[in-house]
Length: 491
Image (cartoon, rainbow, N blue to C red; front, side, top):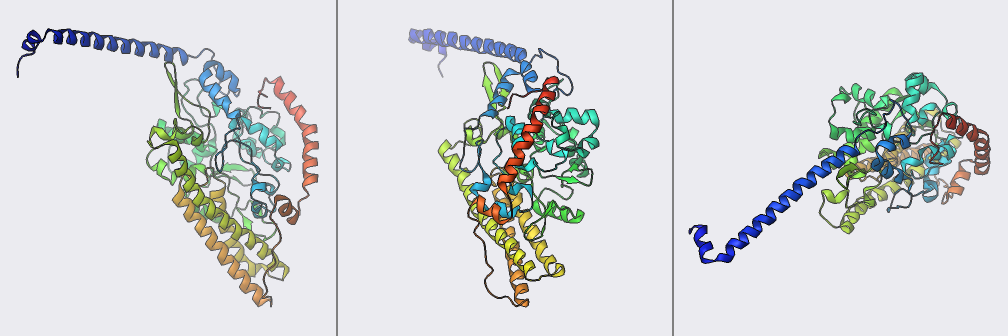
């Protein structure tokens, strides 16, 4: 190989080209270094605490004085315009969309009112307005709705908090879900503020204080996006994870402690009402297996100037596919959306089939009681209905229409349908013994109104009662909140 100096002597222009290239490289390296220093400086300024925060500061706007980027993105959860095929942040009347739910929750407050959850900033408004809280409820129902909850727990004690009444704490619980639910005010590290999660993991032999930062990016969500029940007369918030996260393991737990959320008004089956087992379903899926956290998809990182921060507009990844899905997946937005919808379509198909089977079975069980069935004859049938409904609800109540773990969701719905069919067959045999062999008559439940009328709900009276309660109660709550400088921004 000829020395480069010989090439330069033969081609003088080559020397000038090398010189120019060197100048450009040096300039770009210098520019890059300066940019790094500038951005580090911006980041230090951005995360410098300008106002110290108390241990249990519930007001999100106060946190926002220190962290304006995070606060502004979090306030965007007020936006309710996004609607995906099955969910999103916009308001939907789920009972009107699917009246079978009214039948499945007959005898429970969910048959009165059940709507699609909106953004976190609407949490206080929505729980105040729902017809589900127009009946006596424990204070435990506030637990996942407000940053005031840890403050009140610290003030009166955890057990005393759970023992209280929902209405008694209305003047205390006014700030919506937010910053201090998940962050330590001194270090900004992620932390757990709801004891039920730490207690559930401890019973599994796990120490939550040893969780990694990536694990915490899911665990802070698991404080609330889980299945739970109110244990004992003290209504102590408890996660049924002692046997594991799967629907079968949780079902075995509930059967073991003989827990019942409500007795069905039609079938008299002892029902367990699933809440929103998002974390449990996620834990059985591909993303959890590969170490992807909830925040990676629902709160993706965002860059602004020299600062990289977490986008606190907690929302469906379909609203921000580029920031969420395409960080890992290189397909187009159209392809990724289709992938999601295809999986959800399959789950939804089985979900509706399971609802059909369950609603019919509840009505048939009611008919069997009317024909003289005894408790002893009905007991095994009611257990089948209990298990069928639990498995349907385990999928139905979770957000995402099964997307977090489609295989487990489909299998769970399949076993729900199987158990409903077994219950149906047993009812037919029982009726035959009673001398009835004709078709069991089924009512028209094609609309929310018809279904509610069938189960005996007087919705006009319920709505009038709620309106009267709100006029009498909410002004006093709001006045007490203002005296404590609580936040009423979301109203």
